[in-house]
Image (cartoon, rainbow, N blue to C red; front, side):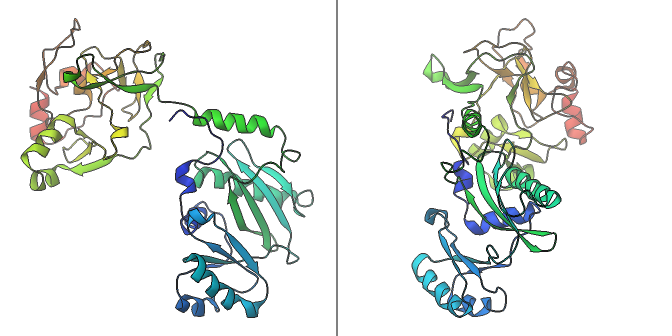
Length: 368
């Protein structure tokens, strides 16, 4: 949104704790044995799966993953039962901190991991490096490169690290003496969040003409305009559209869908969230093209001034499902009626959406 802030983004902070544990697991970081508890039956089954000391935490993010450690085995069941009645769904994990095991606490940030304290720090370079590597993986696969977290590692067995617990967006006030350049780190993190898109949706001067995209600031040639590699899209298959959509929806499909394959089968369509809509206009001499070779990313084909309309040649990414239309771009190279064809695509080389042989119908219409 272009508003500077430091720390994890809102999406990450809204994940339930059990989802975060799943993300940590797929990040290749070893977790302690744990159980998800939702009922008294789960408490009975838990006894054979986790042993004290245990950490009891609420799963819901709106409780702040609040929790406590129970060291007395005879108190475990009672404490868990009581917590279910108070906060509902729980995550109960074994906790070995302070049990004579070697430990290390690390501040994991997008910049780099900072070892803070613990017996591993300064004693075992190899094990400390394993902590730092796990912290880097946490930032990459759990935080997606934004924000910071306090990670507490424990040596569960000789040479085997376990992430005992973690805190997202921890209180950093006590960490300033321990982390070099922490204020600069937070500023850099905030500036990343403040990066606004280089385009904005604008209303035409004649509101009856609807909306268009324009440059939010000066864009240099070859700068990325749409960073679409690894982006999620709403997708649909053409057979599904043919079978299930009504006439109005099929008309919208012919005007706004674009193919994700060369066989006329899979298409990207408009998002349900209107904040992700990008009503870019067509031009026969566009200032935006696909990156090479055949990338999903869209780049500036030349320098673009702030406020200038953004445009693409629809023929570079639409196929035979596109409804032909009369172009009014006014470019010297204007083709008049716009439809997908090999001639229009060929001039862009690898800066167009990929074209393969396709089916006979597609091939015939592209060559017309």
